[in-house]
Image (cartoon, rainbow, N blue to C red; front, side, top):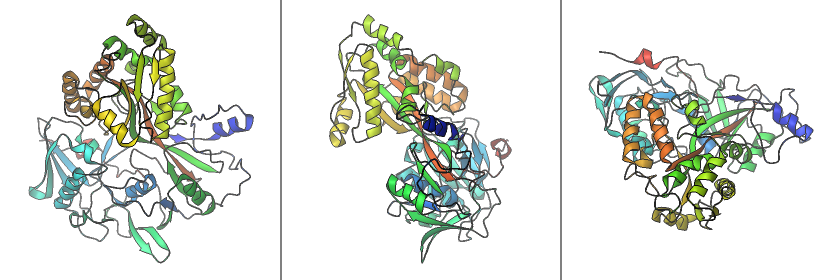
Length: 502
């Protein structure tokens, strides 16, 4: 995605001009090759070493550790890969065909092999997608998928409940062997294989990899070093020669490094409870967006590793309209006037947030200050764990600060469908649900959908988060992290080239 340079941060640190607790990423490393810290730093060698959590899952459908997931794009491949611009590129899919009603997609496979030399089959793809659907990291992607089946000629057919012209955006799911869906470390078709050695775990480059893509890492073997906490990971980086560390926030590490941003799709948002005496008022509800200083939240609390989002999608998404977004940006006077016109000045508002998440709590506290400045009296309940979940389920709030991972096609159905699993506070909106279906069928409808959502005001977008990827200078010259794929690479194929037309 965007390659980031840290020189501005260094200048600000040395001159004292940096705002406390604020960082704006502007690039990828100290340009003079020096460290501003007296702390000795391990000299860079040509060997690539990566961090992982040996106690965490390394199964592609259940792994949650950020550094473990970074390894997966070297071990596994999907039918498609998604680049930093939210574009699908064919990988294990050789070609594909779409029915005229866009409800039936047929995928023909490459002559790929797993790391044990066995050929990839349609049965492997079907078993993989069904296993991913059952639970774990990818399960939320299947709400519009009716069936997944093997068909004649070794193809895979996916049938949808609604027309969709961008299904491949959901199909970067790692494909594993059908016989190993329950294995802790199933085999994949990627360039590396995970193996145990006398000295520990490592990734080993496959000598007979089925394709010949240019990779962002070329090491024949990559030793893995265990670390879980942030301090442990940084010790590995500084003193054990680990080459890369992934984190969800900027860390004030003063060494010679390169720094990249990798959007992770985590969407932070407010929802209004339609049973609230304050936010049942549409004028106040639809004006809420103007009260939120998103840029300050991104800078102060997320250290620049997030993107302000005034529409309910990633700003990197091709159908995110910056012109439309500007119409819903920060203008606090509009919300202050709406509160005054409704005679709500001084009224109490309960802002619900999970206190188990310190970053989200600080964000909620900052939002509370913004709403207080507009004339409301905001309280944040002292709840977490099951108490928090109960209040959320029972609708005991006026506003809720939530966080979820949006699918790569920015599907909002879970918010507005009657039984959507993100429908807290009576968000059901038949018009938005219908328009979401239209957008899935034709991307040109996203702008109309986003306008309807923002004018209605039940959902108020805040930002989309990113990961920070720290790497030793010069070891990853071709690195271009994409969503869910730190080591993203392309086989050089395009969607247009792979499409079969009748």
